[in-house]
Length: 312
Image (cartoon, rainbow, N blue to C red):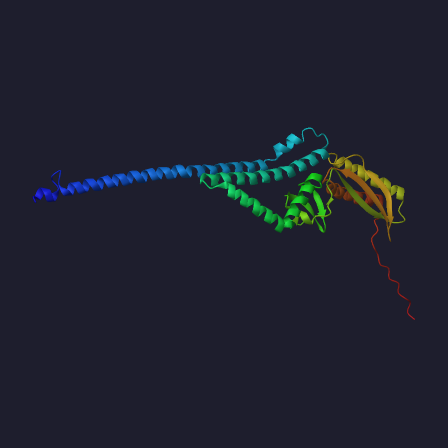
């Protein structure tokens, strides 16, 4: 065999043929790999688009939940009384939270099914299995089912809303969050109290439709009652003037409500918008204290008198 044949100089040499066959195989493999990559990208584009759509919609729902002022203004436009506006705003806040939570859950389920459908997963057996599992969980988790039913009744009966100050059993606080599962209260000392709705049997709502500022003060038995009542009425009118936007109607001085061991208890009532009663009470107590000091009306306090027998 000549040197040209061994070196592949001729076009028909074995080495040239081997190179040609090898090059064709490499080109075919590269073309096949390129087609597979294209199919893979097209296959993953659908699921990725589903995930992106779910993420965008979920973020929009969260932003909608945070921007509540615009929605509250829409529903409180026709309300002329301040108390009515407060009640409507709290009601809207409660429903808005439940609506956003429900829509986020449905949104997640919807896009999860779409995601599985993109991978050609048969959804009929999956949905049937979810129904069976849900039935089993409802029978096993009766407490959770009771929480949801009681939460629905609380919502329908409008027992309280987010922002109300309520007392449930031995716990009191502002309703910070309400779901169909549980109610979260924020106590005065900052504690977060989570109460399952199924355990709520009695609710005391201090901010439902209106509130009442109640102040009781004791005076000495020797005090001129008519003078003390006149001072209380003047203080109540001053407090009403100071909180004009929060007070509903005129104050009421009820007079003597009880006879104590060392004092006479006098009571003043001022009707306010929900939640304003505590600020009115604090301001009224200050005014009463200052007015009693000016008028010489004493506020008695418990005293202990010790009698000592004479030495024998």
